[in-house]
Length: 87
Ligand code: SF4
Image (cartoon, rainbow, N blue to C red; front, top):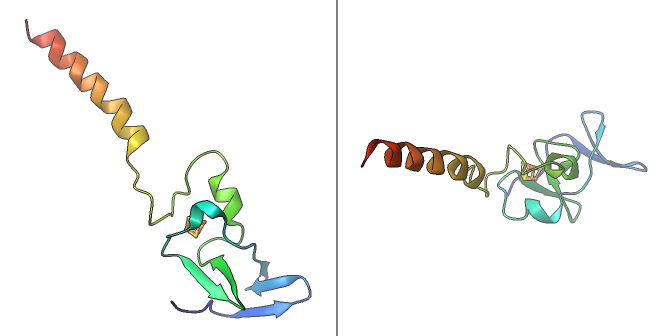
């Protein structure tokens, strides 16, 4: 796993390109965008991973498939269309 690029440890925390990073949250576990730095895990895509998970799954998560919500919505629709056609 590569380290964060341009990361520096400051008194404010770990800073990358002027952004203070927050560590990843529990839901990020397993994501390929996690980078370790100074013994903590950070997201290589977002300075504040926690915010990516408020209101749904992180849209950049590599470990969670973009399935369920969309699939669950589409399938009953198809099923009801099929049911309407057949007799
Ligand atoms: S991309 Fe999303 S899920 Fe992955 S580490 Fe970053 S915030 Fe977490």
